[in-house]
Amino acid sequence: MKHGYYADDEVPRFDPVKKYKTNSLGYRCPEFRPLPNGGKNVVVLGCSHTFGEGLEENEIWISQVAKESNKILRWWNLGQPGASADLMIRILYGTEKVLFPKIIIVCWPAHSRRERLDLHPQNLTSNDSLLKTENNNTDRNNFLKNVFLLEKFAEKNQAKTFHCFAEDVYKLDNNLQVLNGYTIKNCWPEWDRHHLPEAKRDIITTPSLARDGVHYGAEHHQVFAQKFYERFKSKLR
Image 1 (cartoon, helix red, strand yellow):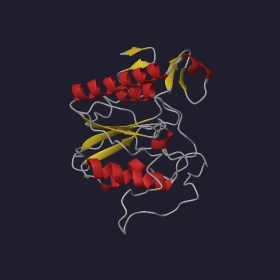
Image 2 (tube, rainbow, N blue to C red):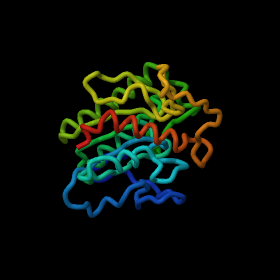
Image 3 (cartoon, rainbow, N blue to C red):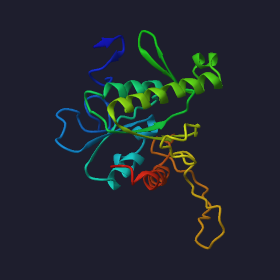
């Protein structure tokens, strides 16, 4: 069944990213077909920070979480550079009959990002002039719409959901599994608030950047992966 850009039989197709090892659909994960037997599929959604712009695959935060997790889990990184929450949820709905996810991890980007459906789908990011018609309320409500669609998908498919954030933390329902307080952006350098001798007090003067000189570097991803795994390791099964 297909209605314009919306289809229930496959995830959206992207041109493979030439400078990274991706599958034929442009994701940094194995091919979808044939699926291995057994195990449980974990679908990970996010923007360029989850895709791993400027990083080796083993440096990406979700790759490090996957390495530490239960071996019965199969991980599918569906992060896409520039992705909005709208696009991420479209990707999720396309996985229902392809990857059959039982665990869904979402690393939300800035909620001001939108997807505009014109002749071609277009993600509106940063200072795009079309974003000038929006405000903080419309940004927030569009974001919460996508959280709602995610949770209804999970309810229908009896899947667990876990929420985290790339740069800014947004308030979500207390009943959801959310990594609050830490984002990929703010988790490094680490700074302990207490004054015990083992407190982390290293003064960092050089930023940690990925090889593209723009995105957050390996130190950010390593600490974020630790925080995420510590928070949810007992539930990732």
